Image (tube, rainbow, N blue to C red; front, side, top):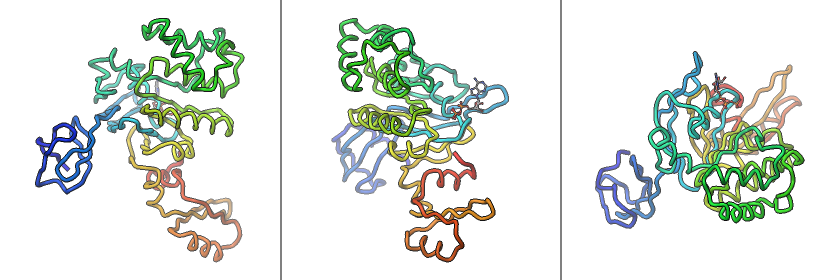
Length: 323
Ligand code: ATP
């Protein structure tokens, strides 16, 4: 829907317009809000705005015109197979790689026109556990605070707060190289939060971790989001996106395939799936009700498994590929 100019007003302002239904979500270039019988109840600017972003590496089109918005306080997952363009998107947004076309804003700051301000808006948790191995946990966090020109007393106060928040208080004096993978990951997340950024970019935050540790990191990510951070997460773990995200973007070959909630994406296929193995070939049938799935398996020879539909099914249905 094209929103009329008159709607570009402040929260609480009366702005009845004949073209709008009594209650709806409204969206313009600079406003995202909720309209209820003539009054804007709530309005937020997207924390991440990406418009038509493109990037070419030689002959490879890593990104081919990506557009999306992430709202304040949202946990948004960017899900796609290897080489889909997830890391390239994060590298561009965080100033590590230049884009060829399009634009992006972080908390309203244009990454090309206001790069210094844009950089203050986020913390980055990269795929690699790139801590200084011979420094302690505290020292790793302290250096990060210095890079953001924070006063020393403020850095120390923030480190105490973060170590407690991350359940790392007794590890402050440990050398980074002595930590397990899961602990290192927590320290890398803490480091990204030293300067209290509004946005956190998490690039494959649980890659290489065992399932128990992965679940602990998920709980931590949920807590950080519940405390107000906007989180942009790339992953190719289906369960990670399903468990954490309010909305998921499927990306494939540098293009957004769809953006929706995990529940909407999976419900398009019905709630239940039956996997059937026949002559070493796996086929999957989808059903709206479990009873129908059960009835189908009764008609088949052995080798059927009933399960809930997941995001991988949705991705395969839309792209013909596995994540
Ligand atoms: P993964 O899940 O494996 O990390 P990804 O979705 O993050 O994959 P990208 O790393 O963004 O994907 O890569 C997108 C495409 O761009 C791939 O084809 C990749 O080979 C290519 N690419 C990425 N970085 C470079 C680079 N520095 N030079 C050349 N090609 C690159």
